[in-house]
Length: 256
Image (tube, rainbow, N blue to C red; front, side, top):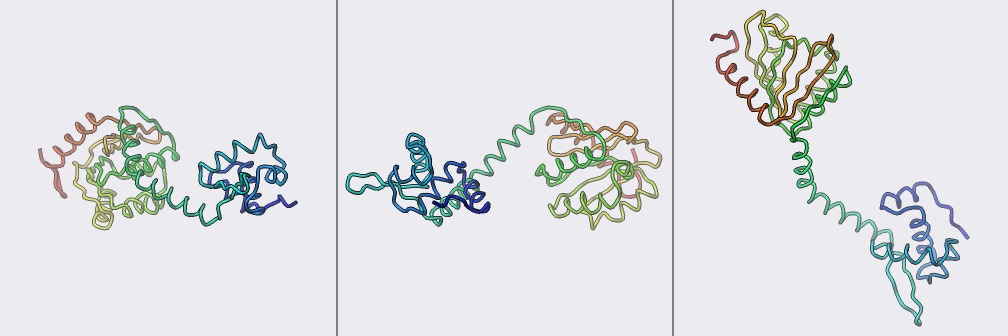
């Protein structure tokens, strides 16, 4: 009696949603062919009272079908190809439901609330939240160099900016005039960014990011905190204030 199988076989069937006893029964059914409960019980060493509910469940899942021979009920394990087809059908059904499920999640995500991140790890999580929010453009008020308190420049370029470019996410940036700012703005065309300058010497200890119904505040490393406020009303208010300043600014100077 052979009831030992490779880990790949066991893992593959568990991925189909079968537990350990289900797997044992299905594999016994494959080896025996059409079988009575008594035959399956002997092969799996499971009591018939245990087998009946398992077989009923597996029949509902399409893993077994039931036949009749000389008034004896036989259980027939479906071929692996049938299980593959069932998996494909489930995947197709889930793919159709996916946009609706994402919409439900987005509704929950848009509920008012506050999320607090800390340190470099928190900084990375904040940017993942932004980049994967589905937004096509965000607004940014920053000195440009303050973000380097949390991560090195290569991370910003190879991780944050690279993913932003891959997703086609644009940004608008208000940034105080400085040598560092000019170097950053020179890269605007290649980084899907449009910048306008605030007057030199403008004090901006914190960076403000407005995206998808959220406002993120990134403090200096001294305070080491990032606060994401989720509120459509407040985000719209900040976006309006940003646009008012943006309309007064240009790429060389700002006039009020």
